[in-house]
Length: 104
Image (cartoon, rainbow, N blue to C red):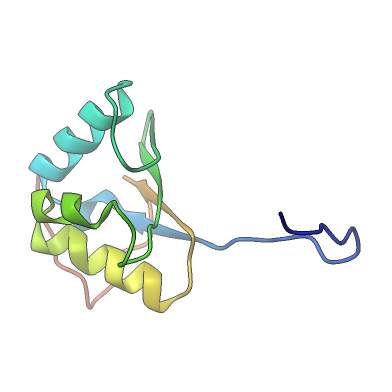
């Protein structure tokens, strides 16, 4: 158990990114996982997209990456390089040049 220091709260970063950077199949998979089906990741659906936890590459969730598109894996990699704990996939989120675009 870690000791909580009230003067230094644990603060986590979230990457906001457009849903244009994932495929429709990725979106359908996230919708399925957010519907209460037991999954190894934390994902929540909202009206404009999804919130999800960015798991470490060595965590048990890694095998699910095989189910995700290469485009989605690029988003995950970008979030990890940016030291983000969460991703907000939003239809009005930021569009990044280095990520793939999908028109769906």
